[in-house]
Length: 270
Image (cartoon, rainbow, N blue to C red; front, side, top):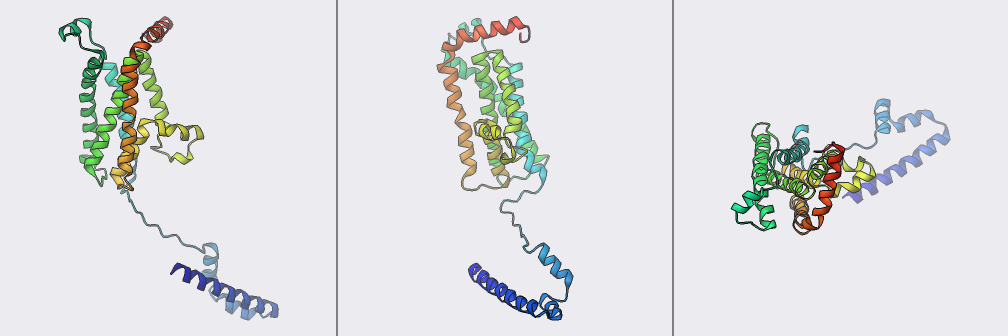
C-alpha cells in the first residue's frame, strides 16, 4: 500500500511539475495562480511543513516522575549501602570467632554479609513499596519492579561490603568514587547518546546502569526480554565480587595493610 501511494504521489508531482512549467513558459500568471490554488495560507503551511508526524507511544509512561523513578531509587540505594558499611562492622573480633568455632574465611564473609543483606532488603522494600503505594509510580509489572529493587540493593550492598572487606577504609572511598561516576554515567537522567564518549564507554560497567534499565522495563513494559537481560548483566557482578573477596583476600592482605598505614599517616583517613 505504501509503495502504491508513493508511486501515485510521484506521478502527481511529475504531472504538476510539467503543467506548472508549461504555464510559466507561457507567462499566463492567472493560470499559475489557479494551478497553485487560491488559498495562499494553505499553500504556505504545506510548504513550511510538508510532512506531519503522528506519534504512537508503544511503551507509554504516564508522567515524568515515573520516568525518573529508577534513577532516584538506585542512587539512594547505593548511598544506603555505603551507610551500612559506615554503621555496621565488616569484621568479627577474635573472641567472637573463637565462640563460633573459628569458621573458615568464606563462612565469615558470607555470614557477615547476611547482616548487610537483611538491612539492604529492608531498605529496598521500603523504597520500592513506598514508590508504588504512596507516590503511585506507574508500574506495568509491580512484582518485577520490586524484584529489580531487591536484586539491585543486594548487589550494591555486596559491592560495598566486598570493597570494605578487601581494602578497608579505601573500599569506602572506592564506593564513593563509584557513586560519582554512576550519578552521571548511568544514563538515568540523560540519554546515554548525549553523554561524553568516556561516559558512554564506562556506562555498561556500572551496576546502576543495568538496575535502572531493568526497572524501566518493569515500569513501561518488557521488550524482547530486556528486563531479564539487564537483570542478568547486573548479577554478573556477583561472581567477580566473590572472586575478589574469597580468592584474592589473602594475597592482598599485606598490600592493604600497607595502604591503610600510608593513609593513616596523612591523617585524612583514620
